[in-house]
Image (cartoon, rainbow over all chains, first blue to last red; front, side):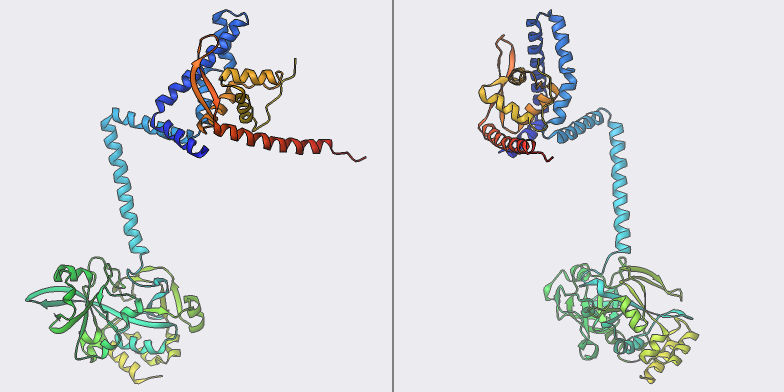
Length: 385
Length: 112
């Protein structure tokens, strides 16, 4: 009951402050009158009685202020009074008000925008991926050659030899020409290993995503389209699954739509992937596929930290940042990479059974041309551990 | 004349409620009644008395209504509400416990 009364009193103070104020004023003044009358009964003349009464209560305004401060809801009342005062002053000077509002508005807006962009660039995780903290970007790094872009065949070798990731995926962006229903458009394509989506733990919006079997199925080439493309090009038609699509002259079948907002591992807002296909689907199963430079991302085994991986397997954990802006030593900008970095050193390669000879060849052409890297991968392939 | 003493902290509310238990009174009346009953030991100045009275009113323990004093002056008379009576009973019970505890300490036999 007391709390209810307190709430009502506080609301009354806020809603009708003038009524509360005039009541307080009347009450204090009547107290003063009664005190003055008492003094007059004691023999003082009226003037002296009033003066004496004022002295006894210590000043009317001081007494009212003491009551105001002690009342329940005094803090709210103060805030409300300040707001009203501010609003009155601002309403008297529109020029100043508009300038102040615009300045504050622009300040807040620009700060929020810069903060939002910075956060998205520096911190954001892969949209749609499950447990992104256990995902790691994998780069090859040699002490005397710096970062080296691996080819797809190197990835295939590493996929079977490494022992810290439960799953290791590869990806590569490239432009492509898409034709369907007599329309030809340029799209951003991403060629991936078959386990790309399962490594990331992404679930499809509709249909299914790429899977490892798609790497070996030469009869039907599977393609996953982005949510954006699905809406823009296919009017969000759920019957799009099973439709055919021509990419760079090859026929693909749409097997699913990626979840909304999913832009792949490389957080490239300006040219996010529209279509995901397998490396085999894009390049065929021959040399062109194995020579393609790729990015790699792995899902750390449960209970394996980067530090542990570093200690046990001589992998060097360079950073645990969520998104890392990285430029390879060859000067090729690989864009922003999501997830912590794991550097595979030359020693790791040696331990994994990738021959040192292969490293010497690649060192001569760091990050080099496809042909030389092709030789390197031939070497890798001809020297199984 | 009795020496003045400070009102024990936390007891102003109880003193006001107890005074109003007898009859509705205006602010000065409450103040003077306390002074009179305590033989002048407790003299509540308005700076202590008014904030306490307003808080009690806000909590619904007393209710103020405008009326006329004996000398026909306009004054706000405060009366005890039903919630106020219950609160006063609690105050008195608690005060009794405190007083008994303090007495037992004071009256306890001293060693030596």
